[in-house]
Length: 143
Image (cartoon, rainbow, N blue to C red; front, side, top):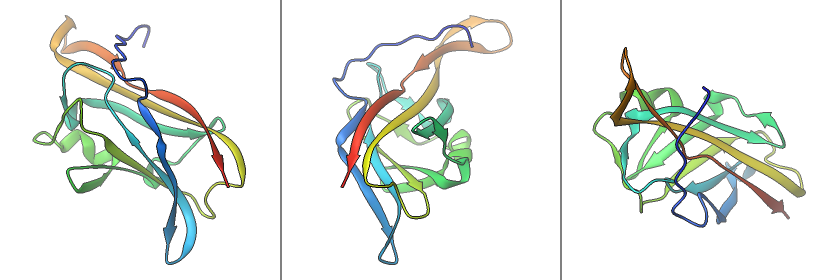
């Protein structure tokens, strides 16, 4: 993809204060954070073309990443089918990543690659729509 529209209306796309360890059966086994759209309009979840999470440059496995909105948590591959789930610009979604043992103590760079298509901006033939970059990168400290 050679270009993408970017319109960051929020100071933070990844809400740094929301970052926390995730515990499963009392053991640290991942992390979670909230994310807000970087656009002035909301989108249906089926408009998400790419959602990837990286920790210190390492891509987390897709099967370890989930997306939660309106109390509904789903794996990334199901977003394509979420044609009735609307993500408002002002509403944060939660991203969860299962990672055995969680993140080690210290600083980590968290990157979210989040690409959507703008369904009302057709820019080419064969249903080619304007791509929207709603990704972000932050540094967090794990205690």
